Length: 620
Image: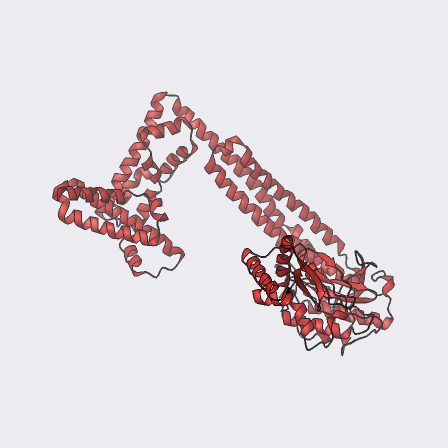
């Protein structure tokens, strides 16, 4: 029985001696199991082994077991502060100890690193001027650890039980003794060492203070810039312009000096970027200066502070300064398209009558007004301003819309900027029959574009709030209204996720349009890469696949294998694999299918296009 008690005693001390950080890294089941094991050890030692191992040793073991259980419960308690833990066993463990006991053990465990040291290693670290030992000793006294025992004494009024207090006292005295002996041993080598110790610590403090002063100076300058009158005055000018716009004050709006606040904002942006650059230079110094890199904890603290400041500053740039510049550019375009022919606001090749000019002006204000009302809102300005831009997603045939127009060269390879405004569309016919205009909604006004070729235009949708069915309906109307032999339909479909190729199939099969899309030029633009592509129809369906391949991300490994397998199966059966059928069987997009087909060309297989109005894959 005596040998069994000694074995249990050793196991108990081994478990009880675990560092708090080791306990925290254990999973929940492991900590529960450890808690139950410690309960068993406590019961066995208390009832059957006290006389076998001696009362003093037993008493110490029981105290350390309770301290270990307190550390486990502390880990559960910390977890429950961040998330709800629905576990009665854990709740029971947490309730076993008092707030004072949790507070005391957390403070004591902050210095658990000392357990892995001895007085000699502390002396060596001091001789080597190790920054970590300086900080550890400094924290010890900053936390008033020399008075720790008085805070867990029964006379202190704290609710710390005797067993736990005893175990904490043992830990504390052991650690304090190591520090004391290590420092004394360090000084005994040479009485002058104590002076060197404080001189070195003073050097570290000086470096830290220098870093903080430089960072604080930049931070204060940034704060002053962002909260000062300069930015408020610019914002007031922007607000003044938007009020004129909402009030339809045409005369004042035309004479408004939009360039002045725009120039001021861009100057402010340059100054802001300069301050951010200073912060990035400070970050570089943290890595290159040996005095700083030799103090890893000091470096880590400063890195986090500067990174946080850079992130905050960049956020201000994107959501404050740049959004205001974007708003002013939008207002600039609104003012530009509100003019009449002959005043310089419109391209001379796009002349119009007085009646048409009046329609343009009405359309301008109706469109401008719609930017500030209705559903499907998008933010066009800084949150400090009190309006939002929005688009009415209702009925295409009653909308007026405008944008900046690009006149394409003969071969459609580049664009020349000019101005235009969309005419009112009524009963599926345009006001001017000699200028066919395809109408679609504008989601993000200041990024939208009109494309024109041979007098026929359409509007690009950079970012749209529509689903595929909405887009199919819109394109169906566009196709149906452009039903002459020499007409072209231009449809630009984009989204934050890139081109949605499934829309094309819905347009072709839509019962709303009644017109085969193969009669029209289809301009597709993948908004992710910004490239514009033209495909002449030649009485054939538009070749969509190659466009979709442009600068796109490859499909995942699973998709590649699935598409490859289904393609080979179809080739075995019929000698031909069709794009649509492979897409449906694999639940993959056309661009993914074609990507895999291109890869398979290396195996002696290839693509042949325009077979039965669709793209197919077959052996060469």
